[in-house]
Amino acid sequence: MVRHDQHVVFIGLMGSGKSTVSRLLAERLQRPLFDTDHMIEARTHRTVRDIFTEDGETAFRTLETDVLSEALRSVTPAVIAAAGGVVLSAENRQLLFDRTVRVVWLRADPVLLAERAKAGGHRPLLDADPAGMLQTMSTAREPLYREVADVIITVDGRSVSDVVEAVLR
Image (cartoon, rainbow, N blue to C red; front, top):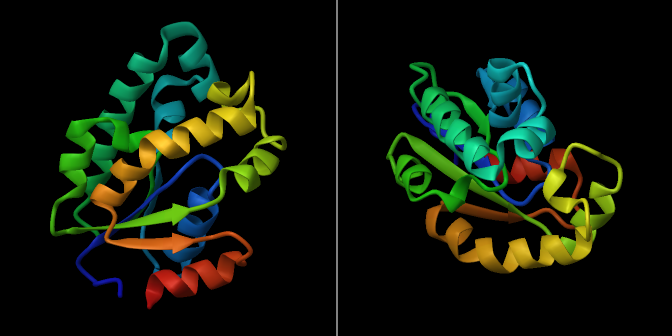
């Protein structure tokens, strides 16, 4: 159950539906929406792909921490779609342990995510081998997602509206 005084933060691998589900939940709850990738792009006037290519992953992760912290400082409880690798930072995981934060892990099969990833070109970490990279990421990140998640929702075979309803339960 989503409390009225809590931020809802979606975590999960790229392609798991964080942006779509968070947008619908924000509309349903009439809350502000923050998408950390969009925040980074607005702040830098560059795409995530450009930041990765030109500055590297470390620079992107620093920006990721900055915008997550900024979103969590919102006085009004918000819905936040966090970048897939947000859990890689111990600082970010600590930010997510706050009692004013409800973390929802949208868990999905890496094979399904690889199919979804073919549709978008903004995911630089998937350029060489989407299926293999997503499986590697899943294995590496699963313990970190589990560490911070208050709720785990498997999205495989579920509609977006069904996932939103599961978040609200």
